[in-house]
Image 1 (cartoon, rainbow, N blue to C red):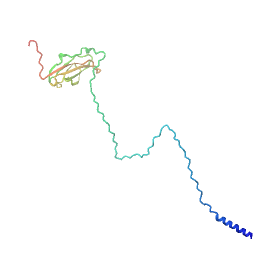
Image 2: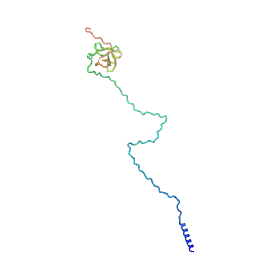
Image 3: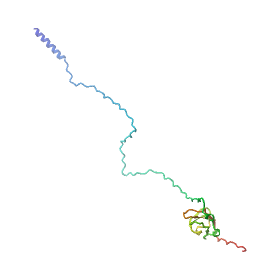
Image 4: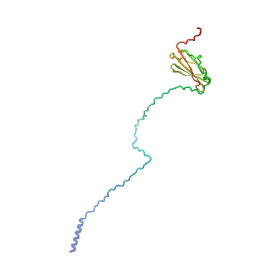
Length: 204
């Protein structure tokens, strides 16, 4: 009888223990998220900073595009004034320059327009040619490219007009090297529309 009672108590306790036991969890445990450690990058100083690299795509031009040069200002032309070089003699002029002069007796002083006036001068030893220039009353050069080997020259009548009341001329010698040897000498000529009067003679 005791044995039976003990078995009944044991069975009741076992049944009570089974009913109070909750089911074990079946889900896997989750781990709390962890933050990875941050690494601080310290920039280092370089000798030169690299140029930024452009990632912009190149612009494509249309096939009909023609490059046009940028306009530039055209400088104004420089005016060149041609002047004659003054004669600069050496330490000593040639001995012939002391006697170089006009021969007045053979040179025309007054002449009629449309006639050919003549000039003459003393020769200089060592001269191979002479340079002659002709100007008008306003100091305007009429002809400056006359070169002769002789010591006389006859002007072209077409060079003279009655409008100018005075003409001037000059001449200087040139040596074999092409250098001017002496200072230029010259004279004056007076044109007239009438023939120059003949010089009067004593007793006329």
